[in-house]
Length: 189
Image (cartoon, rainbow, N blue to C red; front, side):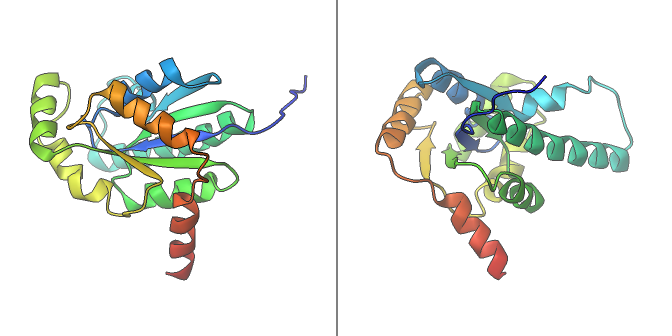
């Protein structure tokens, strides 16, 4: 059986620390975006393994393979013509490099999801499902690449307003350039 692939899908790529509101923002976007979009979350891929305990070295390798697979699943969904809202944590340089390579054929709108550290710590504590200090550990690293097509602040605005800001940005028709800029910077060292 063959699939009529048609045009590839657009990828709205949300990058922010743990507890920054990416998943809630993605849900808000799915309610207002046209046409139909799908939410692909790195946390959903993390949960696929269950709760099996592994030694630290095996766990690191398993997580790296899973995240590489996640990046390729994003590409596969877009290649099949699906529009996506991706939520990810680019807290390690290799993750960004891999996304830049794997997602090169696709239109990627890179959105920085920011939130002040005290609010992240408050949310993390209230959630109770994340290790204490995870957001703080990721805080500087997640946005270290410094280039976005658009940014939102979930500490200053609710997710519905942030979703509206993203939709308004998309409506301008501005071509996404962040991934292209980052790819060029990586190529020149």
